[in-house]
Length: 479
Image 1 (cartoon, rainbow, N blue to C red):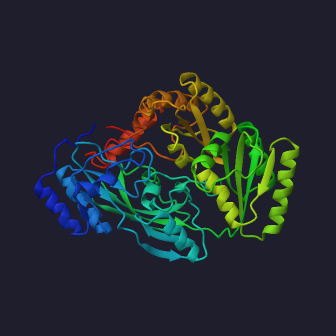
Image 2: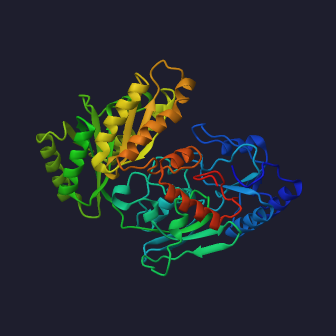
Image 3: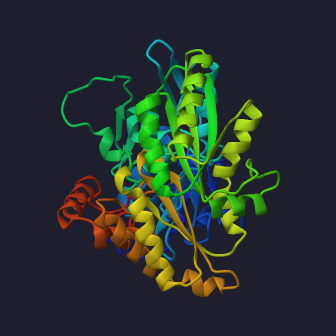
C-alpha cells in the first residue's frame, strides 16, 4: 500500500512521542482508543499503538519531525465524523493517530476585517457561536456541527446546507497554518481577500484529507448576520418539478435563497416513523418536498410578501402542489429536523448503501431517474432515498435495503452499486464525491473514474510534499 513498513513502533519511539505531548497528550488504553479507530457507520476499522493529542502547533511539528525521522505514518483526526474513512488508521500498519481536539482555541477575531482565526480542533458549533457573539455569521452549517471540527471541515472541503449562498469550505478560508511532512510549519494566517503573490498554497491543503500536511489553524471569513430568516416547505410532484421550482425561485427571489433542499416522500416517511416528535406538516402526502430558506439582513415584510406571491404562483403554474411558511423559529426548526434526521432514520431500517453525488443542476432529475431505474433492476424492491442540496447539484443517493432483506448480503453489494451509480453520475459530467471526500472508501472508485492525467498530477503533488508517504497514507490515492 505504501512505503511505510507494516511493523510495530519500538518502546523508544513511543517514549519519545509521549515526551513531546506530555502526560495529558496520549492514549494507549485499547478501550479508550476504540471509539477513535472506527468510521461512524462501522465501515472502516483500524489499529494503532498510540493516539497523540498535541496541545500546540509546536508539539504537532515536533511529532511530525520525529515521525519523518523514523518513517512512522501519521493519521490526522478531528471529530471523526467523516463518512469515507479518511481519519481512520489501517490495520497492522506502522501508524500513529494524531487527534487535534485539544487545539481548540479561538485565537483572534477582527470584526472590522470580518475574520476569525481558530485552531483546528475548534468545534464548528463553537466557531458559529463565536461569530454570533461578535455580531457576525460563519455560514458553514451541517447536522454534525456539534461534533465536527474546523480542521476536518477544511481538510475535507466540507459543504453543508449553505453552499448555495456562501460556497464550500474552500470559499470560506482566507489563511492556513500547516505542519508539513518534514515537520516545518507553513504559516499563512493572513486575513487577505486579495493576495496574488504566486501560487495559492492554501488551496492545495484544503480538501487534501491530511495527505499533504496537517492543518493546525485557519483564518475564516465572516459575514453580516442573517437575522431575518424565512423557512418554507413545499409539496411537489417530482424531482423535475423541484428543479423547475428552483430555477423560477432563483429568478424571482435572487440572492436571499440560502438553502434549497429536496426530500422524497420515502425519506419523510422514515423520519416520521423513527424520529420522536417528527410529523408530516401536510394533511395530504406528496411525492416529494422542497425545503427552502431565505435569509436577509433587511426587514422581513417585503421579502415574505415576495415569497408568498412566488409560492402562490408556483402552485398555480404546477411547480408545487402545496406550501407552508414557518411562523416561528420553533416551526422552522421542526421543518429542518425533517431534513437533518434522514440519515438517522435510515439507520433504523437496516443497511444503507451511500452515494454523495454531484451533477449539474440541469441534470439532477435525469440522474435520479436513471440511477433509480438501474439500482432497482439490480436489487428489486430496494428503497431509493435520494435527497439533499438540489440548489448546488448535490444529491445523497442512498439505497436502503429491501424490507426483510439480509443486511450483510445487501451491504456486500456496495461496490457494485457504487460502480453503477458513479458511472451514471460521470456520464452526466458529475463527481463521485460532492462534499464527503475520498478517504479509504472511494479511493478505488476515484482511480476508476478520474482522468488519468488528474491522477498523475495528484500523485506528483503527493510525492513532492510527502516523499516518504507518511501523511495519511492510502487515503485519496495510493502511491
